[in-house]
Image 1 (cartoon, rainbow, N blue to C red):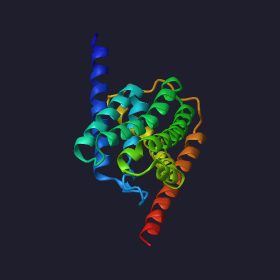
Image 2 (tube, one colour; image 1 turned 45 degrees about the vertical axis):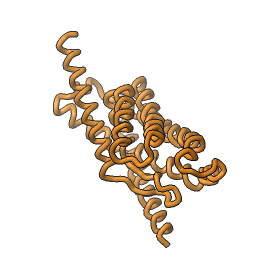
Image 3 (cartoon, one colour; image 1 turned 120 degrees about the horizontal axis):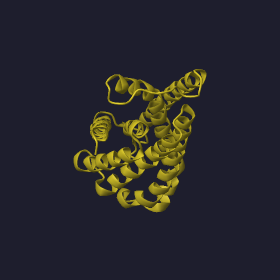
Image 4 (cartoon, rainbow, N blue to C red; image 1 turned 90 degrees about the horizontal axis):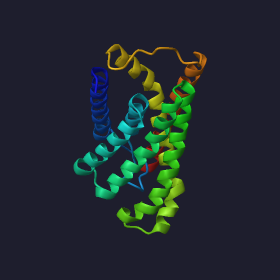
Length: 227
């Protein structure tokens, strides 16, 4: 291994460790209950951090970070044991892999947007399936009861959660890349992307509106739950 490859590997490991620590920190300090009837459904920004890692370092480092964080959560703050760890890992993978893989082969604004949209759809659909299959095991209720919670509980939770994380990912990607490049941790961009300036501005506005709408939705849900 030459010096260049060795440095690249070292930087990747350091950044992967940093993203993993940040992702776990978001879980530790910010977990917002979403569905009162299902206590373990809490919003957290972990997947946004892992998606940033997937965009910057690639899908494999992000997948490994997802696994490590799920294990650490299980032995520190989780109340759902091994099953909860499996669910956390599946949820993160469903969000992180689509955007990471698509952006790896289509490194442009369009690629990032398409990847994030696919991530939102992927996590929403995958978690509906896995909640239907696995949730009865640790909620202690029948599958019929879980079925009744799919549309009013699990569907909006996963849709809003993944949408918020996608918006955060898109808004933070460019600033973080700029910081890492100025710090010399990533190579300078050799050429500008083919997309003009208008598209990123429009998408940023849409992301801000999505975040604002999701925050309002969460606040209204909490108010209604307390009444």
